[in-house]
Length: 241
Image 1 (cartoon, one colour):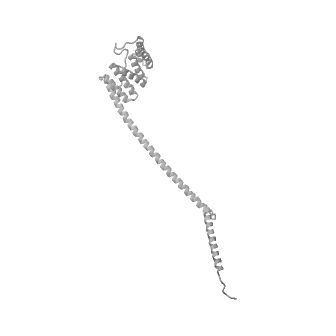
Image 2 (spheres, rainbow, N blue to C red; image 1 turned 180 degrees about the vertical axis):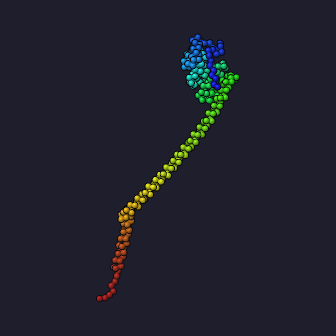
Image 3 (cartoon, rainbow, N blue to C red; image 1 turned 90 degrees about the vertical axis):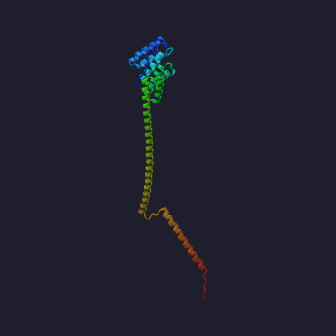
């Protein structure tokens, strides 16, 4: 899986003409690459692509060296540029094949599928690319299933959290109501105890009721006296002396 295509020295002899110094950098880069000195190899390949004509070998192998350094985004950009500009099907197929591999490493499965399909359009007989395409499609399917599972778990977690929050609110309200009732009961109890301890001490409300009652009794008594005086004033003495 993920067989990597690397162009060494000249690809399709005679199709490109290179400056001698550019070929020298490519050759040195290839030597460093074979020694797994990928960062140094990338530096040599970069020097080759800076030369006039931008040899495709150097640019192609630069993408490979970046891939080996796990700089997958940079590698993908190089292979995208090569694949989109190449007029030769072999170069185009190899660039898109390597682009698909770079995208696979970044778990960009749908993008890698697109790249492998472009590679197969340029070279339909490439079994390795066809295998990588099938592998990417399977990985995409697994990713989608995992994302769906994660979404479901996240929704369940959210629902459980909401339920826990609501239960907590309900319990807090019950506790608050219970505390309020306990406080009221305690206040009533304290008041009752206070009245029992001070039976002669009247509350403000009781004193006011007693005062009102006394005022009413006094008023009734005065009214009765007035009535008696009025009746006495009307009496006649009929007895003669």
